Amino acid sequence: MTKISRNDPCWCGSGKKYKKCHMESDLQNVTHPPASMKPPKGIKIKTPEQIEGIRRSCRLTSEILDMVASQIREGITTDEINTWVHEYTIKHGAKPAPLHYNGYPKSVCTSINNVICHGIPDDTVLKDGDIINVDVTCILEGYYGDASRMFMIGSPSPVARRLVDVSLECMKLGIAEVRPYTDFGRIGHVIEKHAADNGFSVVRDYGGHGIGINFHEEPHVHHYDVGYRGLAMFPGMIFTIEPMINQGKYQTRLLADDWTAVTADGLLSAQWEHTLCVTENGVEILTA
Ligand code: MF3
Ligand code: CO
Ligand code: CO
Picture 1: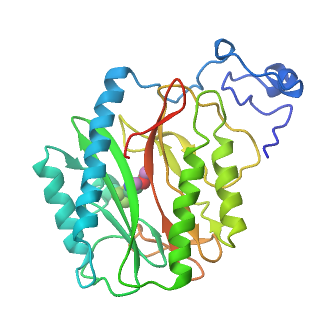
Picture 2: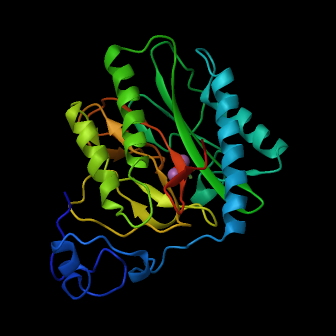
């Protein structure tokens, strides 16, 4: 994978050119002692107190998805899912982050079949064979947790089931790349390979993101192979991995509501999301 040119900024975030920084040691295949690396500028390293707060928010996010999982079925509307999520979130002392976020009108995102992400709950009724992503973000004591899961209604087609399974595998493979002092570029590399091996494509117009103190923080996390190593991961970084995998082509189209992203070719899309924390030894899945 991962070509970085001599004059590109070094992947370690030093701000120096690659050739003036880690190029020589990379060529010699030297492993980098953490002491020689500084966290990239602009990415917040969370304190233990912040991590504990974000952990609690992520735990609630996961419980909200468990609640949705126990009730979702054929015949309900996406507005009903919105009501469940909104009321459960408030009852547990938190706020739904999507509501009024940049003008978003509801408390959760519900993305059915060809909808890639940011589907707005309405009077659409779930029907046999649908696949739907429910994406929940809550704010608990000022801290953000973000996760989404796919649900299958009745008996989706074989290809729909395979897309749901492969997109889950893609997220898990991406998470397996998270540990200190490796590169963000590895995430998209493994995800794109697994999607392509299964004949699917990876959405490029939306990605994962830093999170915790705000909804969307630096860095942007690519789910496709950008062809370079990207920034280095450091303990205390918190971000999401949330690959959107398309049955057909990766191109997207935005509906007139300015939120709903659909596949340009009208084929299916699936997505799973977790919020992750880089630890001293590896990764903690905060929304597990
Ligand atoms: N939860 C989405 C994400 O994973 C963001 C939704 S923004 C909203 O980043 F406004 F549509 F809710
Ligand atoms: Co997210
Ligand atoms: Co989300």
